[in-house]
Length: 304
Image 1 (cartoon, rainbow, N blue to C red):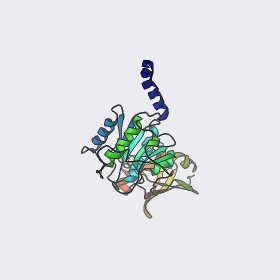
Image 2 (image 1 turned 90 degrees about the vertical axis):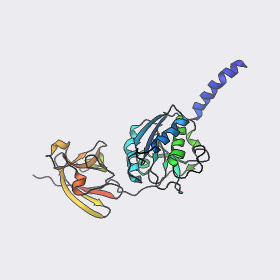
Image 3 (image 1 turned 180 degrees about the horizontal axis):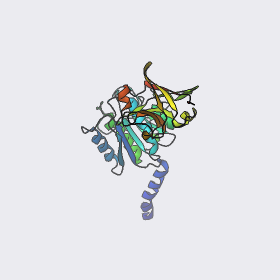
Image 4 (image 1 turned 180 degrees about the vertical axis):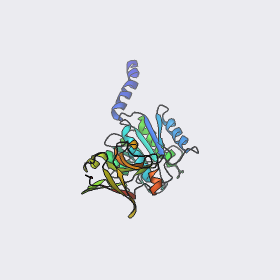
C-alpha cells in the first residue's frame, strides 16, 4: 500500500498532462486602460493569484479609449510572433456589463484570445482562422467574490479565465459552452484588385512618424508588377468622402526620395504604406485610420 501511495501523485500528474493541452504559461495583456492607475496591475495580480509561475507580458495598454478597431489591429499585428499556446487577454470593452458575449477564441495556429466578442476578433479570426470559440462560463470562471462587480470584467473574468487556461488549471473545453465558429465582425475594405487598381483599408498609422499603413500585402501589390521608381497614384478616402490624391514613387527605402517628399514602400509587415521622408504624411494631408478609412492605388504608365 505504501508504494501505491507514493506513485499516486505521479500518476495523477501524468494523467492531468494527458487531459489538459500543453500550455506555455504565457499571458499577454492588451487594454485601453492606460497606466495612470492600478487597473493593469490588478489584472496581473489576479493572474498571479491563480499561478505565480505564469509569465505575464504587455502587448499595449495605450489603445485609444473604446477603440475596438485598433485593438483588433494590434492583435493581428502581434499574435503571430508569439509561440503556440500563448493566451492573450484583450480588454477594450465599452459594452462591459451588457449582453455582449465574453469568449475565448482558439485560432487554427494554436493561440488563445480572451476578450469580449465585440469586434476585437475581426482581423485575427480572418488571418489565423477559427479553430473553436467558447463562451466563458462565469459560474465557474470568475474571480471568487466578484459576482456583484459589473464594470471590471477585465480583472474579474478575463484575467482570471486567461490565467486559469494558461496555467493548465482548466482545459479549453472547461472555459464554457461551444459557440458557432464565427465572431462579431467590424466592416472594412478588404484588400482587393480591380483591374489596374488595388483597394484596401488604412488599419493604422505609424503614429510616431505619421506614416500611413494599408492592408494591401506584397503579394497583391506584385500583381501590378511595380518596379522601384515607378509612380503610384494613391487616393485616400474617409467613408465615401475623397480626402486627397497624391502621386508617389514606389521606393525600397525612405532615403530613395528627397527630404519632405512622399514615397510608397513595404512596411515591416510587408504591407504597402506611404510616408514623407523625414516628415509626417498623415498630418500633412489630414489622414486618419480605422475601419472607415481606405485607399485606391493605381500604377501609372511608365515614361519612355
